[in-house]
Length: 222
Image 1 (cartoon, rainbow, N blue to C red):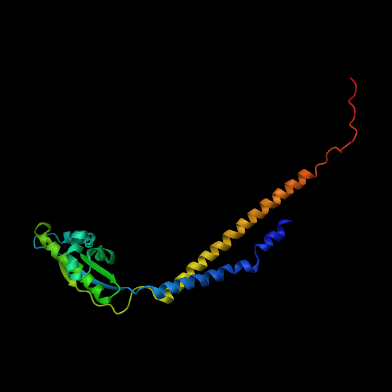
Image 2 (image 1 turned 180 degrees about the vertical axis):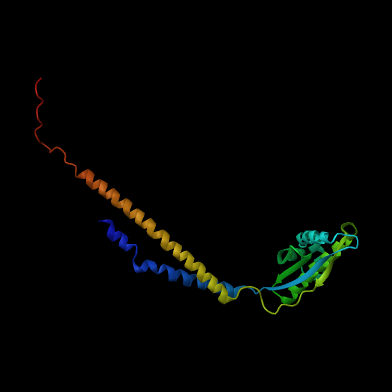
């Protein structure tokens, strides 16, 4: 019966204010991040692997996968920086290549704070990939050609302040819910342990003992 008031205090309305407070804090942090971050623009260029006259058409798909893996390699980005207007390190950090499992096509997507720079980065890597593949076309039996040039993006792809605030609010609500689930269990465990210790101490103190100065019975003679 002693633990009933302690458990009731664990469910006070003040504890449930953790949830809205966490949601508001997450929304504020997410919205602030979305407002101060630099918008990012994305541009995509496409190249396609074409088999030669005496090459197996199925080999083009395999070479497309291989070229997609080396599209951001130092050998390709080192040549691409001449046309992209940025360093090879910037190209490796801001360019991603993706391949298709059923078509010998490679998409090269570049991200930058400036739309024109994103276009030049994507087209620069695509041009370098075409140039490098031509050096080994005699041995591979395939060649890489430009399929579609990148177009200048008109809107950023980075999340807006409103979307960042929504994501932050969801994350804050999740953390607030976890706090509500964890803290009452820990507090209840501490209250039960404290009550158990108090009960053990009271029971030990209530054990009657011999009174001070009481006359002890004499042992019987054998």
